[in-house]
Image (cartoon, rainbow, N blue to C red; front, side, top):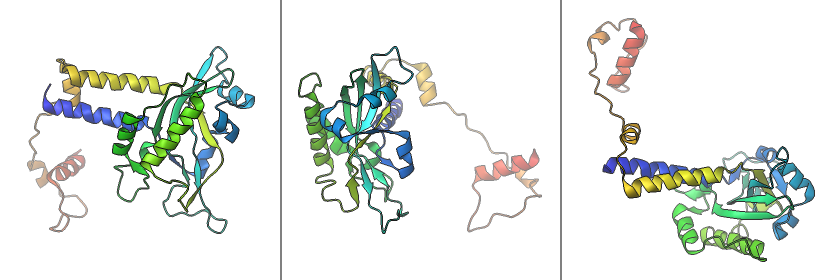
Length: 264
């Protein structure tokens, strides 16, 4: 496999994996899209009957429903009873968990991670609590325990605490801007995690076995014939309003686009 194609596949895989980590920063208005995960459920892993009914709405024939939930949700303190508009997130929920709920209301985690939009690398000045490198190191040495045991839920809670401490030590206990709201968020996820996992496995297989894939090579590295600019058309570009100058000149392709638009 050509080195450039391998690099493109690696970039695609990284982008997909980043997106699968989910989001952890929200606006106050985003609360409407979630169902509330009460504190009692966070302590025991058992959901109240009314919440179970809401999650299974429209899924009468299913024994389980795939969910995504945020067990640690914090909100930014108001300033003199008013929200602040300084670019800082209004709600921060760093831990994102994929799992499922059965008809009895048992919440079973299957994947636990830190939200990607809270991990460096990020655009300069963005709010961050840790790094992707630190998350990879933690999940390599401390994977999510099996949830089949009696103490499975408490093992999950311990995993959450260890992950937060590894990526953002003493958060939010030492944080002056954010306070826990005492409940979590939960939503139906439609089993998207299984689809993403299959695509990641495909990328891994392509990079490991390097099969001959002409169609993939054309998609990832399309052949673009060199187009010779037609400088003659610019001579007829006399009706334009405004002009280029030595401080802000147009690039060659920009001049060509404007000239052909005028000619059309």
